[in-house]
Length: 129
Image 1 (cartoon, rainbow, N blue to C red):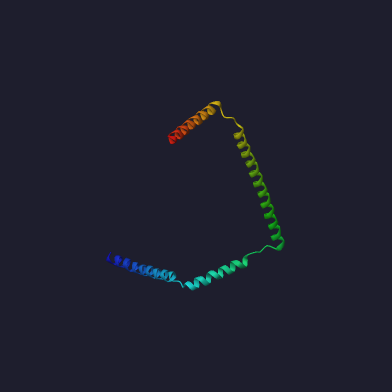
Image 2 (cartoon, rainbow, N blue to C red):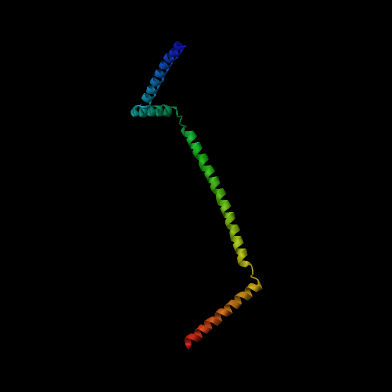
């Protein structure tokens, strides 16, 4: 039994040594040269740039015409909606101005004017004295 325990300990020691060497390898990878990373980044950018397919002049002109046409149609649609809404609001405003005020509101406003005239007449009389 004692021999079995010693054999197990011996087996565990190399495993620990492997783990420590793996940790050392990870720390070396973490300490990369930043200039190498920058160079590899620009190399990959250049490789991707070479994969880009540029449209021909004919395709560019056609796409530009489509964008201008759609912009014009949307602009006209917005102008139309704006005009209709403006006319609608002007119509509502003109209806408000054309409506008559009820007689009770007219009577109330006249009595308020009478009160104001009386108070201004009293104030004039007080200043005359």
